[in-house]
Image (cartoon, rainbow, N blue to C red; front, top):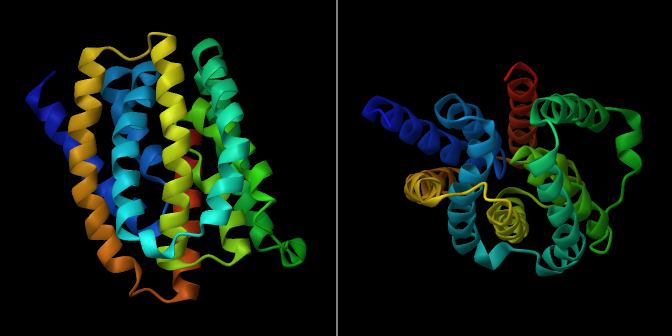
Length: 240
């Protein structure tokens, strides 16, 4: 691979990790367009899964004392089988069609959060079984679907470090399943593993930079940052 392309991917990985460390989501969706340009979408999503899983482990560690373990437990119950189904679908369905569908869906979620109906949502820990199922399936197809679950984590009442750490713990489980499914369909080779690991190391540094900022942001500003990332992610999917 051209050295300039590698430098560009490294810069994109660092920027994606800083944003992800600050907002708690969006790293994969920000990284995937850059990787797609370099290696193609079928290779980009599995490589991004490796890099992002390394980053989410660092988020878990930084925010470990703030993680809501009850939410993570119920989320994983729904996410595991759904991620297997989503990974299988990714290996067999046209990604561009599904990608644009998710972009539209994310924009609808942001609009819904500002509608009167959003006031009636009350999330319990057990309700995250359904959130995990939806996010696990979508993440396995699109490479990243953190913005899908963000609305529900926010409605549950998680903010700043608790939001970032809890989402990271939940997504780490999904990424592990995705990587296993992608490997089964031979979507990852040794060069892809090496590139994913190298970008993951860069993203760990970026995640620490974002994590150092997140607890200095007010709750109100934090919600707007998360929603801004959701809109950018949606536009990236629609225009990518």
